[in-house]
Length: 274
Length: 164
Image (cartoon, rainbow over all chains, first blue to last red; front, side, top):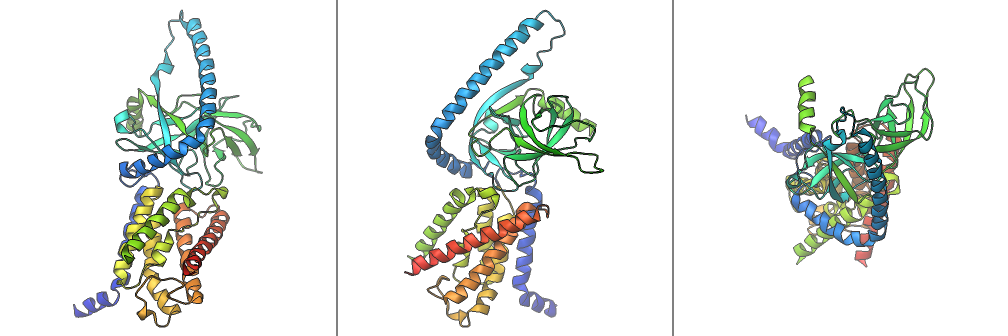
């Protein structure tokens, strides 16, 4: 017993060090991949409030570009409305019309904090539980897909953007409808990688990639990226595809949360199947 | 008065880290961890276990601000664990040091070696734990070298300016 006490006394600092490091690594292992606690993230109200104050000040310096972006978005939305009106008129007489687009509504939000220079980037938005935000909600902006909500606080939420190494977003080619997955290698915030594209498919630089609509997170046809280069290594069964992301994450300011009214229903079905 | 100065210094360095240095782009290669200066300059009057708890607190605070739970915490605890023995190795009469560690209290040579080693070790911990993989290890290595060199330059520059 005495020798044990002597041992502890002698190596007390080392034992404290090991214990504290174990705590740190446990936190790292449990939160790093998918930060679940709003307390330990910028979805924390106090931390987010500070970022919001800072963001309010810096926003004044970006008003010009924000106005331009809003104007562009307005034009795009007007075009979309006219297309949808045409479609509605055409299909009004068809009894099998399902109004599938009405499954989704959009909630506007503002980005108050983001990183683009890390392996695992995150962004914080100024909408939370009280604004009906839920975990797993998709986020887009006028340019394309932004990411998925990972942690929801009362007034703020944390988002895993496409430029996070843990992000995997189901997508498809516009030209032929073949599916793939968009991932990020942690290097350049302008480019991502398209994986799981089999070698028999024809892939050309300039091909557009949009959301597949296979998951309840994003509706189909939201732009994600454009193929920059596609390489098929000798003997490989899958392409190595580099894509240029539509969303410019360095300038991102306003986003829209995609509220899928059937999210829970679909998720329960998926969970049951799993 | 000395405590107030230390608190102001900590506040300024953490604010600079969050608002300025964490937002440097340069292809993600330049992320100097300047807030480490708060720990490097901290007096060695406290026992090592208390030093490590301070490292834990600052690391956890930085992690919450950076959405990187565990990364800064692990790195700061490690730095605080090896700080006192390292200082004892470079400074012969380290027992007399009661104030903060700077170029005014120890020789420039000793301060350079002490900060250089700790800044590099801290950056290695941060970069490897953040990446959590050895893929693109070349990029991670480049990030460690660039970020640590810039951080060391800023830390030395700040100390030299203060000494004048």
